[in-house]
Image (cartoon, rainbow, N blue to C red):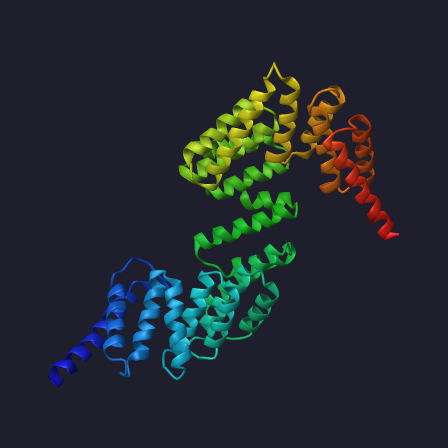
Length: 423
């Protein structure tokens, strides 16, 4: 009987390790590339080890295989549960540092950046995982907008021995952080340095695209154009269209967008149609704008551009309907102003609409509403207390026995209190 139990025990351990290592063959850069049921089987066998043989010397192996398997399957919470139990109860285990490394990755995936940093810094105490964990911590710092810690870590890394791929990764993080902080001159220098050591054509294309974006941000239009002219990749062509829009060359921008819309599928075409719609909307060509927003929605309905196009198309249709309203004209004008304010965030057109309502139709029910919204905007968005006081007095004078007059008086009292406090 003892021999049978011994065989079952070793078979369970052997099978757990076999399934786990077979699953690991489909993992690249700590990511499972193709779904594998080997990790499910590894979890099942590892569980059997712990349940049936709780005093075995393989318990930490089983815990690690379970935690790592859950991680590769994308079940990060369960992965953390098993790996943390291993780290807390078996600190001398040979899997301790790898468990900390995977805990760092799992916390990063769950956007628990503080916990990720703690685990990764612990993993950095191991020679085997020091560099890997340090590279991963750059992802954490970047996503957490902790650029100071990111720069400090990259400086330390750059002083050490890095492979070609590692040096490129570090430089990319530095450049991305500088770009995010709008340190465009520094980002330009970093990405140019990175371009000089990059050999892969696809990677070089992405770097050139980022450099062109920086030139566009800092208004170096000639340098931007030099980077973009002759490039046939849709992303470059789209950026060139954006450049032409910045330069006021609408005709050239439209030509590129038409080319991209007609010659590409899905998301690329949707983005091009969306940009065409925006250009025609600015020209007040609402029929064409709606048509192109609809085209963007059809090309890629669930993409960012498709979803935004649906909203814009609906808003513009409401504008068209209200513009053509012939019965309740004043209400239509007020609602148009509301759309420009709330939906399109076009403050200039919104204020123009509100002013038209209360100046030209002062006896309508919409006039005090329009005047009060103008008051709200000057007080809370434009922060112009002088104009706010003037508008508040206009409301109290013209519409004395209304809720708007009461609210206007409260605002006057607030402003007076603020003045007295500051003095």
